[in-house]
Image 1 (spheres, rainbow, N blue to C red):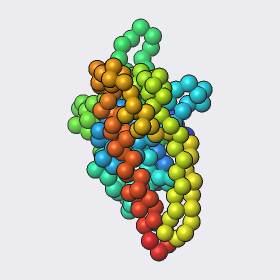
Image 2 (image 1 turned 180 degrees about the vertical axis):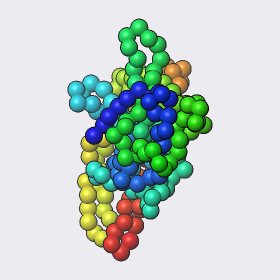
Image 3 (image 1 turned 45 degrees about the horizontal axis):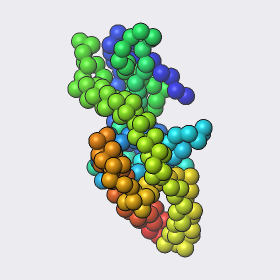
Image 4 (image 1 turned 180 degrees about the horizontal axis):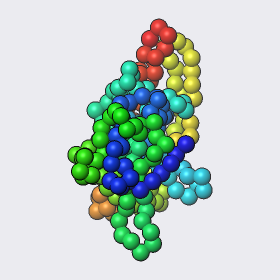
Length: 238
């Protein structure tokens, strides 16, 4: 159960965080949210897909790790087998909290209910004098990147909707054991519509710095085949 609190040296001086990877730490997830600002890094490893919100009036982006709930095909023997982990995963168990009304900036919060929290093992958050450790400074930097990415993403998704640049994904996966799986519920960039955009619209996307993340999302789809390969390796005789 989550237990969020503002991180302070006074309350959490002895806190340590396990940086190991595994299902026991909550890493057994099919996907996590990602933001356009990190699409360049994400597309090297993961498919980038889009999902419509419950109100059906907006989208979010996700990095895909598996094809069913609880499946992360990048977890192997206590390791995360990829050169990059999306920020939303990498910063856990920390998160950005919003300050009281009238205050600016975000606050570093921590989920004290996380299995990563310990007082005996792992990486210290504060040193003996109560100063942030290099680990916490790195986390704070990543939190800032992620927070800025979230705040700047709404117009990106709205622009994709404005020009009808997303289409539903229906993926039929056939594994080496002959089993088939249908993967639905996400959207991808519609390449033909993107190519057909008039020059003035392309210029608008370029001026907003949206062309790069759009093309990164398209390029990331080549990782779907690699993800299927990972799934085949998990089969009994894989």
